[in-house]
Image: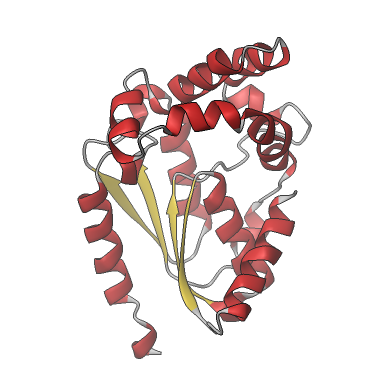
Length: 212
């Protein structure tokens, strides 16, 4: 299921709910889907909240995501060897840091065990979809909506890729504004839900549907 197909699903859901235009928020690969929706159906998108999207940062090719995220390679190898638990743990440490488990379990009890159950879907479908998705500067210039480019305050301690991706959004997107979520890594809204909610509410208020 590609990023483009998932954007089609999102568009269908909005139509089913009779929502003509909305603020769209996405986290990680979900932010990629939000960007794709804005490209495919701009009339439906009032603004975008992009929480550390999984932007491609290297030249095209099947290994581009691996080249920017070295931690993914061992995670994939563990998965291929049948060790799903170690694969998920390695991936989560690589994107969110070594202390990801406690806040995740507080927010969503049983989340880690569920991730193991869903490992086939993640490594077999979601990750390849992210790897094959493209988003280039000429795509970004087509997005005229206000964008909140979110990065975790501590994400830079896990990997420089998150700061690099935020800088790309701020450089490429005409109406992007930065937001640094205090005390968070890639888990963001899981680690600091109040801070994330307040930031989004303020952003939505500045770009309200009623102000159109």
